[in-house]
Image (cartoon, rainbow, N blue to C red; front, side, top):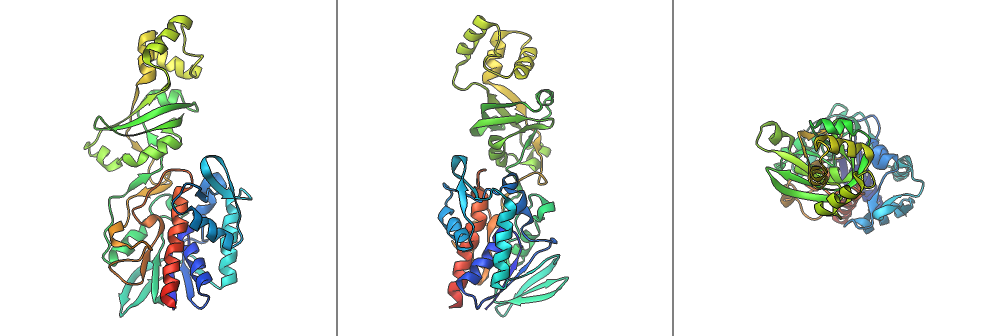
Length: 370
């Protein structure tokens, strides 16, 4: 059996390795359009690579795979799992080393021109020749961070086999606001309850640290809520979006005002720069300040876009794939990782899905080869 994997990122490389581990007689070729494989992995987890999370659905699958190729993980806060070396480069080195040991061919700087399936044989036409296989795996990633390999080309490949793709937008990304106060507060971090409203209706909320920037707001809680923001809908004036911040969720407005009456300030509770901004907006009125602390609104004009997003919201319709990622439309075609319509919060959940979905596909591929 011959297998061609399009995409040399997290999903593609893991799928290739696990396929060979399951059945060494299977021939596997990985086609990658960048000059090196796994480029995006280097940037994950701030260079540490948050491989998975103990609370992720595929945790045991991902953990078992990496132990099988000799990589040990250690736990950090909130169940996040990192390589024991705390180096993303160590993850890449381990994966590439496994490919070499197993005889997996990785062809880099290889651009896909078109794909076809004739008489149960897949033909992949590239600028480096035609690659034919019995099984084709699409593992190209989404559209987030094109410079690291995710250019969105995989969606057209999936469509060539009749698959539908849901609406796409940047996710796990910072949010932009025209509010000048964000620039004034640049660099200030504060824990708060943040709600996101679309057309005056709450769509989501999270508690955690918000970072103010010159363009708007950032932080894990902001990025987790960002998938609700649709740049296209905002630009077309079909949506209005606001972030509502409660800086002190464990105190009522009345309790805050009582504190102000006693101390004439909120600096014992909030960062002084934030107090200055709130004081200016409230014209020095303590009651208004208390109200703003509980209900500070920012107009959201959009996201920072795909170049800054960690993942893409949307993808290949899940109803068209089985639990192993095999297409229900084309036998022996597998679609894995971010290319599918699966999105998860920060903390290793998305990378876990990239790895675990690849392992599941590889297990079915090897089963078919027996």
